[in-house]
Image 1 (cartoon, rainbow, N blue to C red):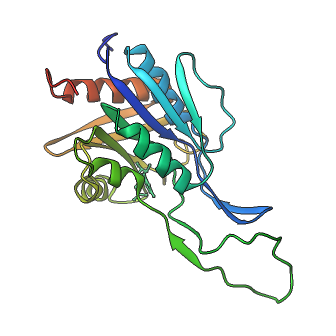
Image 2: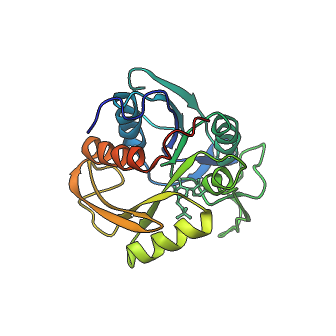
Length: 222
Ligand code: C5P
């Protein structure tokens, strides 16, 4: 892992879950500890990058030399991401964003009345796709958690969202991912792929940063 391989680069990373309010006391969310995103932030700092993490609600300490912006909902994360991506060389979307939010967040607590209630949900913006599709987009990296046909689905996502690189995880393997300190992944890009064997998230993060550094266009300062 070459030190200083991202010297002078600005890296922005989303991490953790988002939280979508139903009412003042309830929300919907995804499983996500934020550990992978925070490990990526540490690896980016080690590689010499100026690093910002946009964090959903997670119980993690901010790594040294990392700037942190805390957000709650997907829409908050989208706003922060669009702002910070304008100044970034590399954008890594590691967050487990809620795909839908309650159509209307109630201002008072929803009361228990009938035996069942129905929730109307609205699609959230796709943060990484909108960053990848901006003019002068940073080198944009996504994650894909899949249970089957992992690489094929990841490749589809790479193309659909317009990403430079995607990190595909097999989430049917309970040894890794989510709350675990370990992960394994396949890196997938337009004309190649690379397997990362099961290892702790810091090791996986360094390998991802190393892959990104090797793919960056040289001498095209932004
Ligand atoms: O489409 P899917 O949710 O499987 O894609 C996962 C990738 O897209 C991750 O990199 C995740 O951070 C990103 N994503 C996003 N905004 C969304 C949904 C997913 O940035 N609303």
